[in-house]
Amino acid sequence: MKLNIALLPGDGIGPEIVDQAMKAVKAVANKFNHELEYTEALTGAIAIDTVGDPYPEETHELCMKSDAVLFGAIGDPKFDNNPKAPVRPEQGLLAMRKKLGLYANIRPVETFESLLHKSPLRRELVEGADFVCIRELTGGMYFGEKGRKDDGNTAFDTCIYTREEVERILKLGYEFAAKRNKKLTVVDKANVLESSRLWREVAQEMAPNYPDIQTEYMFVDNAAMQIIQWPKNFDVMVTENMFGDILTDEASVITGSLGLLPSASVGIHTSVFEPIHGSYPQAAGKNIANPIATILSAAMMFEYAFDLKEEGKLIRDAVAASMAEGFVTEDIAEGPAQSTSAVGDWIAHWIEKN
Ligand code: IPM
Ligand code: MG
Image 1 (cartoon, rainbow, N blue to C red):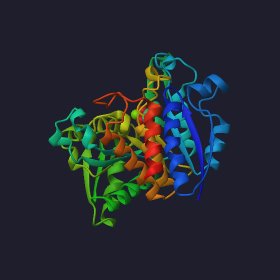
Image 2 (cartoon, rainbow, N blue to C red):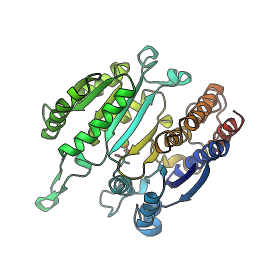
Image 3 (tube, rainbow, N blue to C red):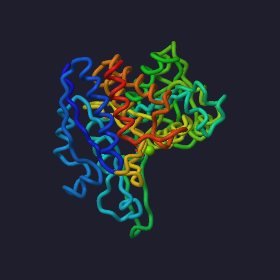
Image 4 (cartoon, helix red, strand yellow):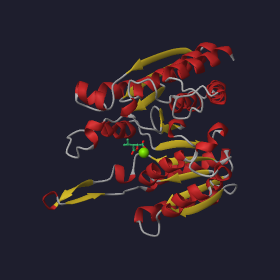
């Protein structure tokens, strides 16, 4: 099969971790005789510095004509404490989501046996936790009308959703639940927000069409609590953009490391695969960052974008082997820590020989 990938390494540790993921991608493509083509493009702070735009048109065109996008991370501290910056790296990510129509962000939360002791939760609470957060990604407060009034002293962001937007994301949630443990938790704030009441209304209309699936409704504050109290009770969780942003950070740390979780953003055009962590600028260029979340994002790319399950599984198995062996970076190492590139090489080599 011909695999045509756009690489968007971005900022901070982005380039290093994407390099490691590509080692795994090349090893798998080689093994299964896929013809691999890949092109790199600019996004994030580096794109602002180079061409003045965090998601340049040229990058968008490349994404549109590729079969999948592998994304590193964006963000640079020089923008974080400057609320008046005219253009910010994060706008590139939002523009990419909107222009590619990536309305669903899929974040699987899985635990690794060898890391359970690093979880902030007690082992018995988190062991065996396995759920998927599906976050709506192109609506809500992120994209609703926003602005300032009264000479700049009053500010507003609007949370807006259409029925169609809610329906398509819930439909995806039901499809995931059907393939998993048949439970869908719809997270909202319907006791306060009108947009949430629309979510709940639409969910209540759709639920009878999925008689095999148990639909559960939960207010977001309660969900935040239950994720740390009873993480094993969740199977598929679906929620609006802002709630999803917050809950997925919370959900990710219960596994023991933020450096491990991959994600897929899917929708209308080309899907994007990226680690859920940020650009970790303090580690940039030091060859110490954990590449596993990006390598697992590459596994998701094989599974979701190319429907190549065996290839994805081989990458997952290689990652599991490196963790079982303790051949990992400093954030999760018990013994001697390995460098980013050494972990990438080890995983690619494991793929070659298995
Ligand atoms: C995420 C990030 C982004 C978001 C930022 C970088 C704009 O936190 O992907 O979760 O808020 O969506
Ligand atoms: Mg976030």
